[in-house]
Length: 244
Length: 369
Image 1 (spheres, each protein chain N blue to C red):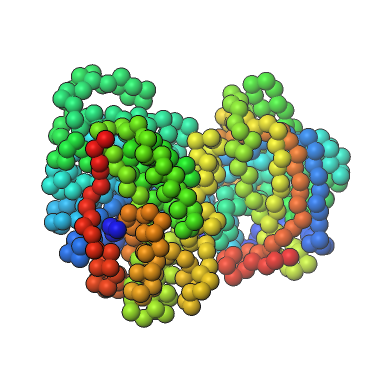
Image 2 (image 1 turned 135 degrees about the vertical axis):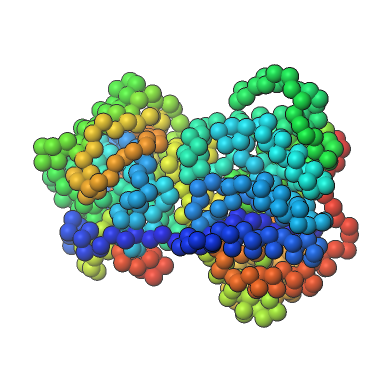
């Protein structure tokens, strides 16, 4: 069974600090949601994950972007780069990097849900037959993505894997399980294509989103639910899962 | 009730030199013993690229060896992936017929469409299309085995008039099955008059519901052939030992390891959003691998074929009572049980359990329609 081999302390360098685990819920209204999956090389599958997680084969880089119309922090946009994985037997996406265009939203997502949110620009635009996502950090492009040819799907056909992110919590360094609840009104599948990707901007140095799989563009509401579980990053989930 | 063994060729890491040879030769030894002991079937899956979980990408080769090394047991091609990027339908018909000849008419022919992105993506298959191509295959394959010659114009392939050779020994053709993972696929099988080859772990209650629906629908099926296979089988684990505590300890290690490796597969729906794949995995919550075993002193989940002979008789009686006509067993996973123990488990099962279910003659299914 493959397990992650990343140095937990090295990963912890980018981990946010959470003062409390008693967070949420937070309602995000009128959200455009782009999720795009790309295969990445086998060679990186273990090195990107802590020992508490298991890679998938093939490993996927999953880009998740939100353009939020209303939230407790006002309108904001966010983009995450996640790596597909398993926590025990459960499907998860490990957040390597997260860029948010509004500082107070970034602070809330980091402090409340453990997302490694840093400031940057995130522009998600939906046109009739295409979706464009442009993300930059420190003024440099982090990701440019185009997705075309929308094909309607049923609302339940979009699959959003539960998120896990490494954070300094009141219980110590932990993987925080983040479970956004999606109430979607429209879902379309689109064909994604990455035109620019800087792995270092997402703490994914050397990763190349080599083979596009598929993407969805959706619209609806998202609830950031209260946290329920933590797990240790250095041991597997069967040993290291903790209920909050 | 019929019994089979089921090979995934699961292979433990590290993939040291010779490990796949060990796994394959252990499986062949198990098949020879199953034949001697009176098991009814030996099945081999078709999977591609599934590290650890299944290194069984050429089942027709495995089953040719099984056929050559056995005398009575039926060889189950379980199942051929019916998408053209992986298997051209003419080649499927040819290989299956040859295997039926080699085995002297002992072939059981399973059909499937693959359920992981690892496999579909590897062959660059469009997941939206697999149900359509599977449907086309199951309708044209019986014609390839029977018609001399055949011309065909279809959606996923066409062919000018040719005689597809050889023809199978069994007439009109070997029994046909559909692997059933997602809820609802049993109805696809029933509507076409195809046997229901269960490959997902389900509870008694869920299997009873599926079996009842299958039998209801198959009564009025529009069969793809001139024969209907109306058997319903399920998949299980087998570890039988006189000492119930030992059986539980060893058997459940196999069950848990299989469940873990299964959960690590990258299911199509997780990577590729589509209406064509509604399930995320085949060990869904509520399935056998997740259920605790209230009332079982060793914590073995309900329905699992792990335990002493008395427990296994009771478990199989229950499966029988809900309409299951056959059970296929994993006898090992990733070599977690030593080969000698696997063979001893099979012998004990054959001596102490199987006779309880042999009061009536059982044979290959199939009724003329």
